[in-house]
Amino acid sequence: MKRMRLLSDTAPFAGRSTASASRPRSEDDELLDAYSRAVIDAVEKVGPAVVNIEVRQVRGRRSSSSAPQEAQGAGSGFIFAPDGFILTNSHVVHEASSIRVALPDGRNSEGYTVGDDPDTDLAVVRIDLSDLIAVSFGDSASLRVGQMVIAIGNPYGFQTTVTAGVVSALGRSLRSQSGRLIDDVIQTDAALNPGNSGGPLVNSRGEVIGVNTAVILPAQGLCFAIAVNTVKFVAAGLMKEGRIRRSYIGVGGQNVPLHRRIVRFYKLPVESGVLVQSVEAGSPAARADLRFGDVILSFAGVPVAGIDDLHTLLTSDRVGDPVPLVILRNTEMITLQVVPAEKP
Image (cartoon, rainbow, N blue to C red):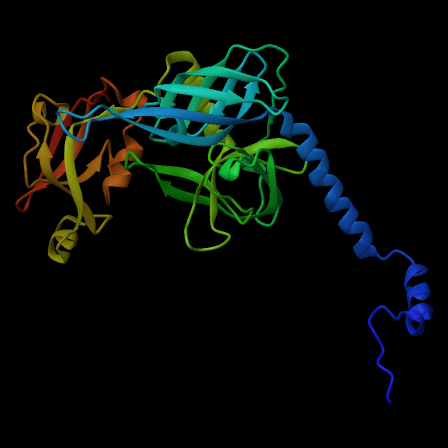
């Protein structure tokens, strides 16, 4: 009868095992160790500042006789100032009736919203605790595609979960829940899941270079973070005033193509504009005599090819400053003077 050799019978492979054990370390091993050390060092530096945020939101009644509905949610955040200031996403804490913050060291605290900016999906929360570890900010302008990055957060409630990847692309645009475009967004393949929102994206030096904000489902490896240079500006404004000042003119519109004859006749630099579909009563647009059916071509001397261009130009320094607004009314080009007001 033929004898069967079991996998536990390792005698014939003893020589090979010994040779493997005595094999000198390769450059790949050293590189892998360097990569691991970089991730470990960054996590040990930033991890103690990453928090779990649980929120409750009171929503409207389903009917006149029912009680208000209460919803629960969770996300991540990180301490960026040792006196208790925490950065997170606006969509994590927006309109929260209560906020509970859990620290990696086991402490818990009630939190309150200092400022909220849905247009960039950023918010600042504060807690009243001492002996806090804060992160250091990096410079997102110095990032390069292919650079290693590390995401830390609390996906599905699993605290201080670490994923690593690379910067996949820079300068992306992402539409916020308010409808405005967030510019200078970092694309990464560091895995993110629900609950990672508001957590830090970190470089190999343990510096925060972005705030994780979104993933594209069901795609894999398409994750996005708000660049830290945008975060610095917004956080400073939220801490100072509780909001970010922006201007508005009070119109609703949609992007429309321009007739080629119009483009050639007026020698326009763009081939589309913003069709005015509504004008808010008493708004700067109404006072400037902007009408339904007009097509906005330029604002403050800058061509406007669409609504996103107009949003980009409506900055805080435009408030109260008269600017020329070039429109197409029927087939006639007209220049109006509009004075943007502060967005309510």
